[in-house]
Structures are given as structure tokens and as C-alpha cells.
Image 1 (cartoon, rainbow, N blue to C red):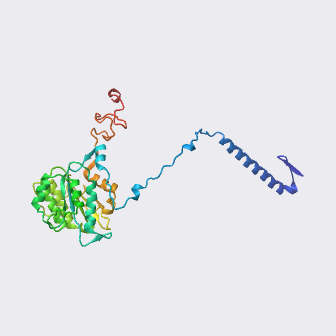
Image 2 (cartoon, rainbow, N blue to C red; image 1 turned 90 degrees about the vertical axis):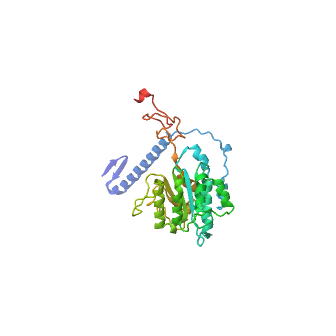
Image 3 (cartoon, helix red, strand yellow; image 1 turned 90 degrees about the horizontal axis):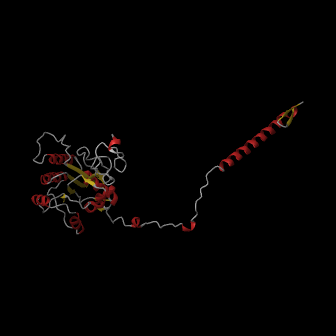
Length: 334
């Protein structure tokens, strides 16, 4: 007795063996069919005719010059050219710099006085050649009187080249005539009466010096920027933070403590960074740009910056393209 199935005559006694043989046959057939189908799919793929020019292939050398420079060299980014090319709008018209070196301390094995001076030198070299009023002072007692500093500030512009020469020759920096950082910021407040426009104050000091007294002096500085005629007499310094935007306070902190928000509660306009974050040219240039500029101009308010806008006088309400020009004629637009 047997069963005829698919070309196989299966005897009842050998049913198990013949069934196994049938499964193997079906498995081999299925695998073969899959391979054939896959091979057929390959013939439908598009073959690109690429001209072989291996003989003209070149490998350019990797430029390592900028990475092989000494870390003691500082080549500033050309922010003057960037400001002109991108038509950056001015944020500050005046720049006051206050340096507070500590002769008794060191940072990264370097005396704080030398380290602070070098930070200011790098900052000053990154300042673009644009019209600025202002000056720079060092916290401490010195020969330069308060009245002479005030008079010079009112007539002389901020001159990066002259300041750099002063720093390179090791000349003594002018002082505020105040022994403390908070007192020196109060001195800066007195100078605001001789300045017009928005004034940016940069403080370069150790993080440990940013205490409550410094916070109060910054509040007074902000208030004086809003009330040039004099201070308002109030029982507390709370709420003195200005909203008029006549002054902005920035800081470069020295030390291991990260205090980017130390001045935020008293000055929402400016910001603070760690000195290690701005020691390299690109980072320092970005920091200087934040102080002096608000961003590229957009004269017609169409959302396309002027340096990218091919139609800088687009009428308000028009539909524009990415080049800043109207996409339709006036009749179609309406």
C-alpha cells in the first residue's frame, strides 16, 4: 500500500523517511527560486556610465599651519571687514573697560596681573576699527586723577592701536583712584554724564570679586545710564535694573568657577564668560561682536538681511522670495 505524491511513490512503511526527503527537495527549490529572483532584480538597476579619470586624481596637502602656531600667539579675526560686509548694526556707541588684577594671586601658574592684562590685550586687538568713545582703567590708586580721566574721556575716542602700544610697552595703565571693584564701577557711573548713546561696560576680574557690593554698584551704573541728571533716592537697590537699554554690563571672569549668570540678576542686557572661553581668536571675536553689534541690518523689515537682500527697499506687505524681492507684481499680489 502506498501513495503517489509529486512524482514520489511513498510506501506506508517508509512514510517518515520519504517525507523528510520531500521537505529537503522543497527547501532546495525555494532557495534556488529566491536566488534567481534576486539575481533578476539586479538586472533592473541603473548602471551609471562614469568616465574614469583616475590618472587626474590629486590629493592636496592638509594645511597644518594654523594648528602649529604657538598658543602664545594671537591673530585676531578681521571683525572690521565682517562688520562692513554683513552690515552689522551698532549696539554700543561707547566702550568702557575696567580691569581688576590681583597682584597676590595666580591662575594657571601665571600671575593674575599678567594674565588679566593679556586678556585685555586680546580683547582690545579684536575690537574693530569703528567710531567709539570710551577708555580703559585699572582698579586701584594711581597718579591719574578723577577729573583728568573724565576730561580725556569726553574728547578722545576709543583707540585700539594706541591702547595696544600702551600694553605692549608695559606702560602703567590709568587707574580709577578707587581701591575696590565696586568703588571703581561707581567711578564709571560718573563718566556716563559725558557720553551719548548706548554705553557698554566690560569688567575683567576674578569671579570671587563679584559680590553683593559689586551687584549694587552695577545697579547704580544702570540707573545712572537712565538718569544722567543724577541718582534717584530710594530705600533699596532692588528694582534698579534698567529697561531703557542705555547701558549694558559684560564680564570676563578669571578662575575655575563658571559664573555665566553672576550678573544676570542685575543686568539682563549683558553677559559674562569665563576667561578660558575667550582666549582663542574666534571666541574672543564673537564676544566682542556681541558687545558692539546687535546683528545684520534689515532696512525694509522683510526678514532678509541687507547684505543678502537684492531689493533692500521692498514695500511692506509684499510676498517676497529668499533674495528679498517681491515674487509677484502688485496686481497679482493683491
